[in-house]
Length: 486
Image 1: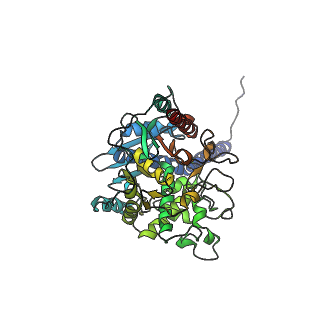
Image 2 (image 1 turned 135 degrees about the horizontal axis):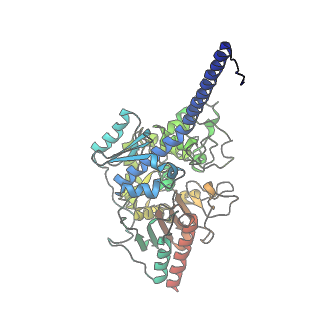
Image 3 (image 1 turned 60 degrees about the vertical axis):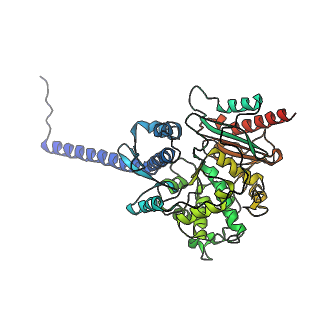
């Protein structure tokens, strides 16, 4: 006979109690892990959402491009965004001039376009006032152009087949990702355009985002204020939060901000987890966030590239010229853009009216070339001095043992690599060259010994569109022009 096991009622109760506790424990662990993961991913997902809203807004309403193309070329290939692409929803409202992005129905961000101020991420109802003020403000007055015109109204075709081949090479596309996506090239020799080309949908007046090439524009605005006697690069940075002499940040100079040697804890990895990403895409007051960063190294002792230094310089510019976005617009237009003949340009702002002088100016390829000519011509626009004497030499002088100057990259030997594993310079280009450079392959290359400026703009995610591609392009252009001369 089969023997039956007798279970005491108390044992059943105890086992059920243990089972319930175990289930509760598992649920608690799952909940804790879910909350922890949510907190861990909150910042990078908000950064991804903000990046999509802001760049699609600028591409659509400033550049006049197809928002779907902007997403495909600029947003989706960045970092891990492609992995979560199916969870991203972007809404473009052309009537209200705004873009809204969510990820899995959450992590909502919103960017609004304003005439003259471009696109700004808004976080609170009052942030919209900046855009509203921009849309109702009178147009920024234009002063007389001082720099000679660089070309006529028609696209300038290459003067010889070798130069044409150089442009062909730069516009050649890969048959699979990552793509190169060259959008515009302008070559200026002896003050005149000798070749230019634009991708489909891009024209001579299309404003294209310079990303970190904007830092070089901030260098120019600081230089103008130095020429006017309102700032000095050796002075302690006039940041209100640092005025206590016991604060170790008190002695950070404008020069150290320009040279990326401030020592502030504003690490930039573009991963979404880093402080610099948070500053740009989660904080309505970018400079307010940056000025609260702690000091991690002695100012001037170590080079560390970060948008934070240039956001602080942007706040200094804003406060020096009047304190409002409209004051910055008037100043930049009257003192820099108009004398150079830069008529298709938009400098964008954060929600507090501070310009994003680290990474957010859009201009036509011709206007980026006009900006490069200012530095080729030692800070002169025609017969008018825009930058102080010696400013170009200062800006293109090497910082520590790096390939960086003071707002420009320099073509000098340096140890290690630049950020993101890029090479420091262009080995096939003359050593006296220096350049503005931005994410995805924005380059304004100035070669004094060749009386040359070469602009390459695009949305590259392959080395052939980044520094290596710019190196090859400029070298091929120089060879083509020398061949023509011979």
